Length: 235
Ligand SMILES: [Zn+2]
Ligand SMILES: [Zn+2]
Image 1 (cartoon, rainbow, N blue to C red):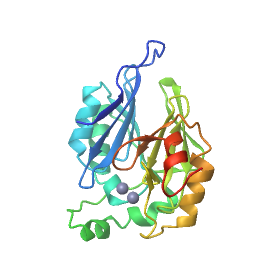
Image 2: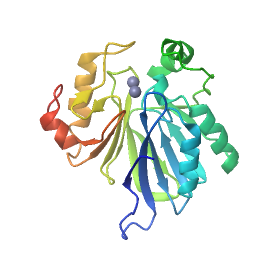
Image 3: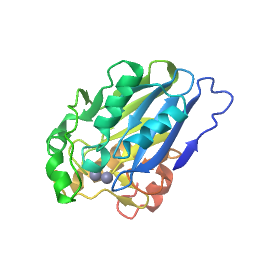
Image 4: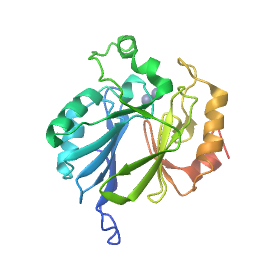
C-alpha cells in the first residue's frame, strides 16, 4: 500500500508520532499522513485521489481527528480527493476540517474543471479553501507537542507552491518542487524557473542535509543527496 517511513517510533517518543506516505490518484501523487496515535490527530498532505484509501489508512492507524488537510500546491493531481476526505473526516470527528493552500495558487484551485478536462479525468467541484497558508506558518497537532512543523513558500513550480518542514523529525514534504535527481516543471501556468531555483537553493538547501524528502511523485530522497547530485539545482 505504500511506504511506511517510520511505523515504529523510538521508545523515547512517548507521543506515538508517525508518518506514512503512499501514491494516490491518476498521477500517483505521494499523499502523506502525519499522525499521532496517542491523541488520534493527523495532518493530511496532498490528498490527490483515492479518498477511501486515505480514510482507511487513517482508521488503520487509529487517527480519528484530521486537524488540517494541507496542499503543497493546486495542481489537480494533489487535491482531487480533498472534498471526499474533508467530508468524511469531519463526520468522524464531528468537527470542521480546514482545507489549506497558499493564496497564490487560488487561480489553479478555482480552475480544477479545466485541469481535469485536459487529462480527461472526471470532475467534482472541490471544497472552498478556508485556511490560507502563509510563509513560515506553524504546522502542529494540538495534542502532540513534539511535532513542530513550518510551511515554507517555495514558488516556481506554481506561484503558491509550498514545502512543509518538520525539523525535529528531519522530514520535508516538497510537493512538485523537488524530485529525486530532478525538479518540478516550470512550463505550466504560473511556472518560473528562476523562482524554483531560488526556492530550492535558498529555502531547501539551507535546511539540515540529513532531512528525508517526500517528493510529489516517485521515490523519496534526502536533501544531502540532492545538494550534491541533483541534475538541475545543486547547492
Ligand atoms: Zn504539480
Ligand atoms: Zn504533481
